[in-house]
Length: 240
Image 1: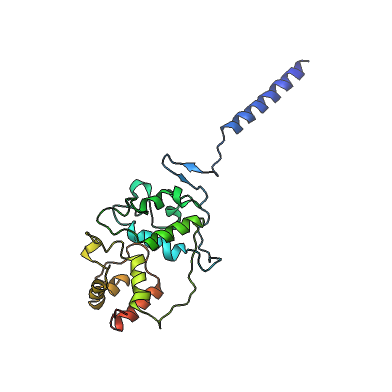
Image 2: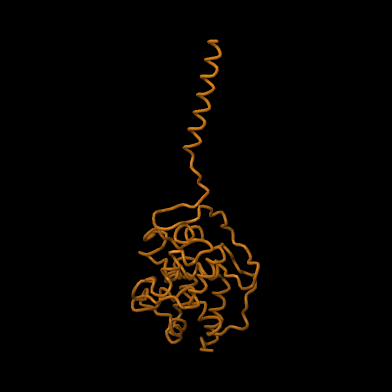
């Protein structure tokens, strides 16, 4: 009888300890509430993938450089400053906070750049309607780490309107526009762009040549884009 009492005492103790342990475990695979917004814990989709459809937004070519140009400047949302916890220098840090995949209207990042949202801050040029639409669509599609690079570089049909202006708008105009442009350099108009194109400063900066400040400061332009800039400049930097 005594041995049976000891057996059941030990058994009950083991079962109770197991239940207590399981009750104290937390599920780290679900949403994380940081007190201000909900972010997704699963950031394993960090390898760029080719979109399934031609009209899907490409994070690497369309979203990341736009956020870097307009938001990831020193003192704001770069890797060093991380103002309010936001860092727009990579895919992983971009989706870490303020982005709810599939829900742009519930994502603080989108609401901040939407009309009247307060970002970029006063003195900087607001995102265009097309840029806001790109950000919205990317979040709605699941905020994935997509890339559209085809490996083919068009070096024959380069114009300011269709090639250079969109390139600069996505990668440079966010910093170099408004009432307080970075380095007192404005790239929001053809006349301003031509000035820095013809004096060698634009190509020198994007190439990171000695004596020039590397531009963009985060996320170097793709080699194809640098090649296209060089071809356009050598052809006379025409407003075509």
